[in-house]
Length: 194
Image 1 (spheres, helix red, strand yellow):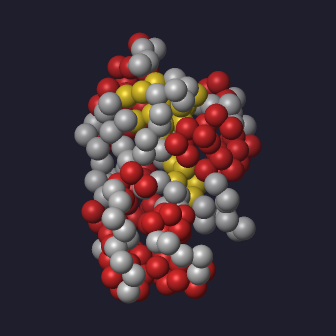
Image 2 (image 1 turned 30 degrees about the horizontal axis):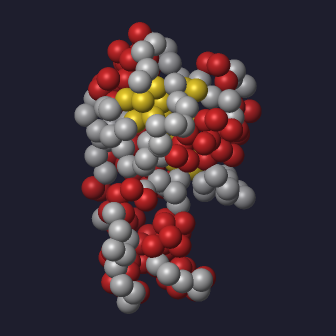
Image 3 (image 1 turned 90 degrees about the vertical axis):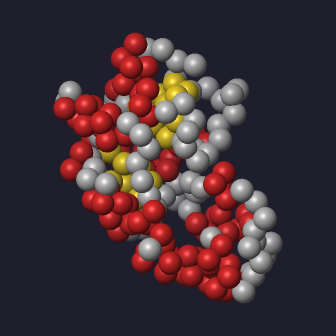
């Protein structure tokens, strides 16, 4: 975001960008750059994409316990899917780079169909239709309010990963609030929730 602002010639935002991660990048720019100029937002998004597509995505790393947890879930017969606001080509690169791609049956991103999905809520709704699975058999794991909203809108239980990027207020109901992914299997197996 800061790189894109420098390229386009607008002041870098004086906010904690980490707390804004999750939504599509254009939505983030609309929050941190005071403008209603769509052309400026287009230039910011293009500058961001150019940098992120070339180098930025390489900085993505799994949180502790993610790989082992996903392998254990898949090994026990669980079906795994991804719902992401990242573009499909970047999602695939990251999952391949982290040696996780083979663990997932399908990746849903805004641009994984045409016309693009409008939200994670819509992606989850289509996943449920595509695979004809019961909501009671699903758990959406996420770290943003958008993830929790998508699960609630579709009748799914949610696990909120507190160590991620987003913030979900304590009064928002979720099945699990977990401080780290490493605690996922034990918490879900025992049914414990905070």
